[in-house]
Length: 81
Image 1 (tube, rainbow, N blue to C red):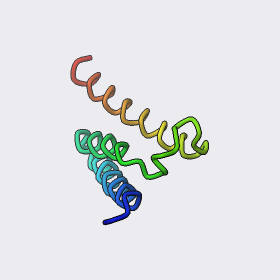
Image 2: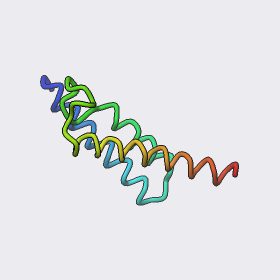
Image 3: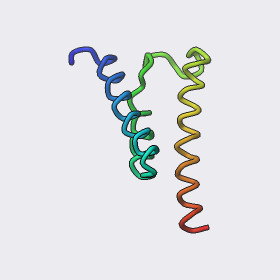
Image 4: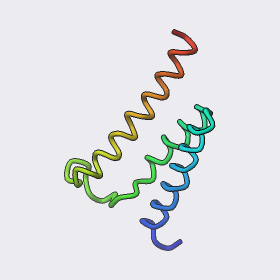
């Protein structure tokens, strides 16, 4: 793939699907890895600073980060709480 943006979108989609599959199978580790790593491959324009992005793009990424933090917190709480 010569187009880095297309590669980012593809990797984001694959890892997002992996994370959602992990959630569907109640496999917390797979879900956190997939959803967390997908954030590294920004599907939007990575050259645009976060505060200057459209509201819907910021919302998607923020909700995804909060969801990953929530899943990690829930898993830690169930093991050590």
